[in-house]
Image 1 (tube, helix red, strand yellow):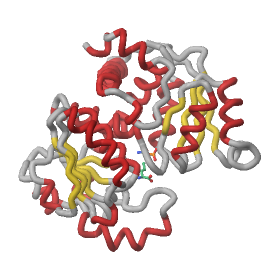
Image 2 (image 1 turned 30 degrees about the vertical axis):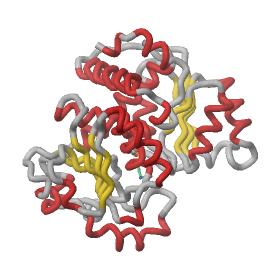
Image 3 (image 1 turned 90 degrees about the horizontal axis):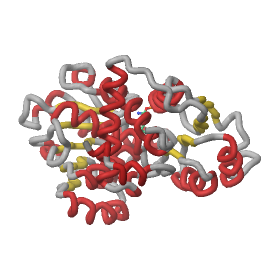
Image 4 (image 1 turned 60 degrees about the horizontal axis):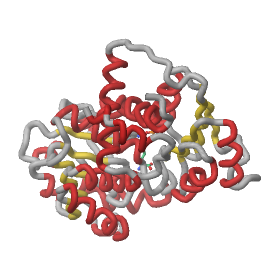
Length: 321
Ligand code: CP
Ligand code: NVA
């Protein structure tokens, strides 16, 4: 199994996860295999203490249920000490620069998780702390979510290479961008169905073009809903991400034709297409209740897989396996 590959294992020790652009397909494969192993341990009641003596700073500028709980429980149940630090409580951004905060946290913690607005903030934490830093969501990327999503696809359809994932909604948001990168690396065919105003930016598409050429992934960006034909998985996210609340009316107007409902799901032409959503969802807006709470939905598996994948990322990068 790839998770036993000692060279890949060594290459992951000490690494931050800011975006999947920084990881090779072999490294991502290793983390997926390790996530599967971690989930099996959890399901069979195997109790390990691999984070004993380690501590994790959890910095949050934005709200979170899944990401916070996944990091906190995955780390704590294996003997580690997670510390939740909301930015309303600490000096970061108010009296102290990100660089100095990073220097201090790096002296006290084994690793740092950051959820917030700017990608540059998580990059600065990684540059100045000297410990692994995990991007728990910025305006640009949500990499830990994308790993859980690929794990969920593999649980349903086997190895992800050659499968077709369609993201329908705000094509320029952090979740769509992260899926674009990870699919390009792993060889999943990835279609973003979005109005032209919400296309992902050209820079990212340029970065992904050679990656998809190498992996065999077909990347398609289209405003046409009929592109869901043949999809293994249809994915959506909220139309207005955290920090963009002033755009709500504009997004409803742009994205209403892109709602995931039974009619759209039928356009896949398949009876076994699964529905995915990173959550939290606004039921009745980007997806109808009958789809998200119906038999094709895998959103609760996806949410659970956040914990297993996040544990695997921390085990590998902290050298605890
Ligand atoms: N999917 C996700 O990141 O959920 P939270 O915002 O609850 O962490
Ligand atoms: N795109 C969403 C994802 C939430 C997990 C947001 O940034 O709010």
